[in-house]
Image (cartoon, rainbow, N blue to C red; front, top):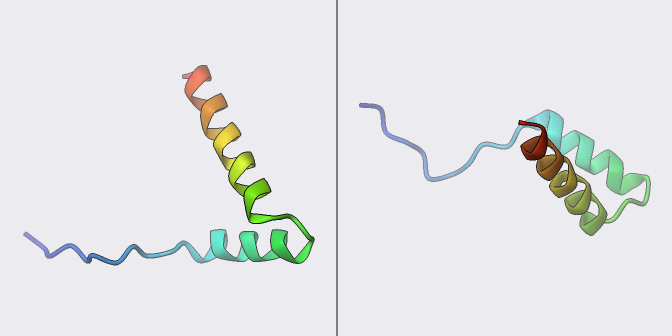
Length: 46
C-alpha cells in the first residue's frame, strides 16, 4: 500500500481563481460564503 502524504496538495486552478477573486476585492469571507452556499445547494438537489 502506498504511503499517504500528510500534506494536502492544492489544486492550482482553485488557487489561481481565489487569487483573482482577491485581486477584484472579494474578501476571503465572501469566498467562503459563496462556496458554502454552493455546497448546501448541491446537497439539497441530490
